[in-house]
Image (cartoon, rainbow, N blue to C red; front, side, top):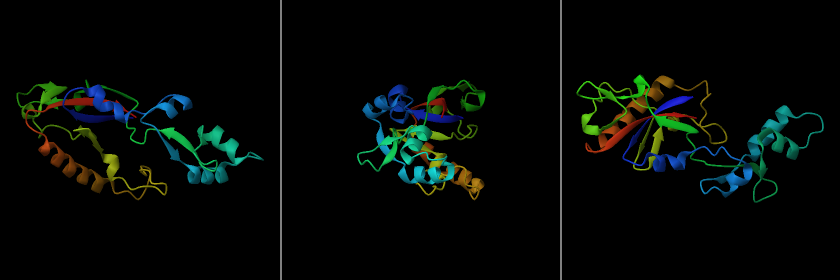
Length: 188
């Protein structure tokens, strides 16, 4: 899915780097400094019970189903990944809905905060400011494994959106007027 992100400051590549999804082989992920071992043993055991076929061992299930590997302990199963992953592709936005409306009436992808008409700007899904990424998923309830439970049917989306808009406005207010802001279209 595509999302709308606002990044403050320069050097977009450097700022986005810590949040990249690691789309690479197991050995390369293990070596990547952003990767850690994510223990998924409990989740995999639950899935194993649900999808178990014939005499398939738990080990074979882990390797085939999730391309899992052992952790430091032989009884741990999971994957090496970037726990801060947010995107697998991004670009400076050229989507008319995800641009920056200026007080002059123009619409651009980059501008200083002081030039932007925030009354006309749709709130972005995320903000990356001073190396801190904040997005709407952080408001989402967690599942039993501690991951955002975006499929939870009991979520109050209206309440989450209202809370996000409040947080978004506070974050925008904290940005200095002479700060460059770039509109980003990212995919995850």
